[in-house]
Image 1 (cartoon, rainbow, N blue to C red):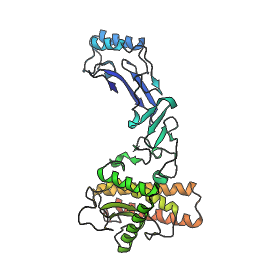
Image 2: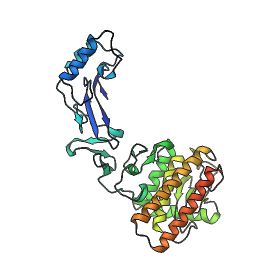
Image 3: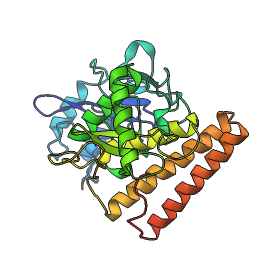
Image 4: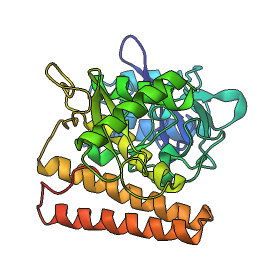
Length: 336
């Protein structure tokens, strides 16, 4: 909603699941997208009723908790303004759905830092610049669950139920940026540094899971996921992509002092809710998402017979770990 400096309502908007705006000017008492004679009649009828009907916030234009002649006077200032479906603002406001930037000139599209979202189609208009980080489709938004996931940067959605997002938090933000720079901005020296640290952790036996995990490297939490390197089996780029998604999502789970004083290169990283039911539930969610990712590759990635067998084995391992956690085995392998 947009209000004046005096606290009077100017306009407000609601949105479809994927962000199609429906703008409403102040005085739009029936929420049909315009302020017209019907709305004026509604206001007059309400004011002339005795006793007064139940409070309706749409008639309280000065937002003072009362509906009176002052609201009727304000309504006259907005008569004739039309917004409705696909229109965000009559005042030139560009900020709306999820904090995204509305692109007036291009219809129902939103600029989301790294990409543009077409809210009518419910799809991204550009490929994901970070590859398969958010599933097997480069243009799918919110993994087709817009009421259950958020994506503040246009690169990686995350479940609302977890209460966190990889793009927020002092540790998660810096770690995710460092990793994405290493992997997708061709910072080869940084990438090799991470590879070596992950390999050292595996050789020391501190890596944790058979597919990936987080370790400390020069005081920085670093995600590792190479399937072959970490003892999971032969190199399989499809499994690597899904494990990568899984591990990067854990950027939101890092403890504030995950790699603080006293940690050595290759030490396993602690989660914020280490060995708790809350962390077990988050890990179940991550592993369930990885299974969905693997299923997507099975359908669209044309895996060979050998790769299909490896994917089945990986899924079986994940399901076993999920079942163990659901049975309360919090000490089950923490990061597969």
